[in-house]
Amino acid sequence: MLKGLAITPPIIGRISIGRVVEKNGKRLPEKSDEFQITTQVQSRDGWMLHPIDAELRKANIGKLRAIPVRFLFNDTDLNLRAEYSCFDRESGRPVCVGNGETCRRAGDAGIEELPCPSPDGCAFGQGGACKPFGRLNVLIGDDDELGSFIFRTTSYNSIRSLAARLHYFSAVSGDLLACLPLELKLRGKSTTQSYRSAIYYVDLGVRSGSTLEAAIAEARKLDARRKAAGFDQVALDAAARAGFANGAFEDSIEESAAVAEEFYPPESSHGDSGGNGNTEAGTSPASGLRGKLEQRAALLGGKAA
Image (cartoon, rainbow, N blue to C red; front, top):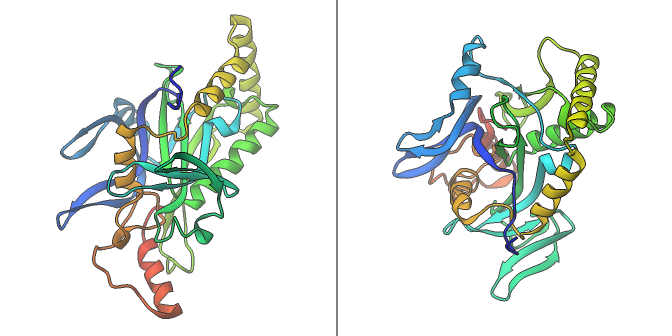
């Protein structure tokens, strides 16, 4: 195995609640209030839709706001990795990743391990360059049992909800997270800072029409079938853990440019929506407490969080 290269779960598609569009000669993130499932291929119009997107829309009335999923791993931290991340906006390369205690930062002397005070207390990550960044891998359908779809987000709401749900479902199922039939759900909420406009975030729940008890019973049956067939979930989790630990940064050079464009746009247009909204470039900075609140509300108003 090549040292310094993170070995991550094979990705066959993306899940997003926003897209990048061109406005006034700049490519900026734009909000959305529904899921999109895409391939990893881009055209001039953006990421190409995955066939699963059309299949799920046929089974739904209205917008796609729920996706049936399973997980690859029983270990919650392997399914969802959340870190404070800083990307170079010009090159798109990751330069610093931390957990609030320590960080790995790329410098002239190579990768250094330094204290991580979190974005609010870090001079290196000021100006929105550093923010929480989550990556969630899920299985959709049965065509590829080890090929996952990835959902990336810089939303506090999404990261917090997904982390809590994963830990709770793991606990109540007796550590059978990889066998539970679950569902990604898009939820809306309003806040004072959004001037009570709807903002959206991703949550996790039992599939529509089912119950937690039924989901746990199904998970136990699937776990028994897998063990009888020789499926080693413990070994799979261990292999994934070793693969993630093999590199300083998860995103490859090829992926990081697209990640930076969607989630770390220029300072004049960056927000807290995880790439699902934007403000117009060139907005003058607000002054005073009210000005800051109004600017914050403009950033969040109507955006997916």
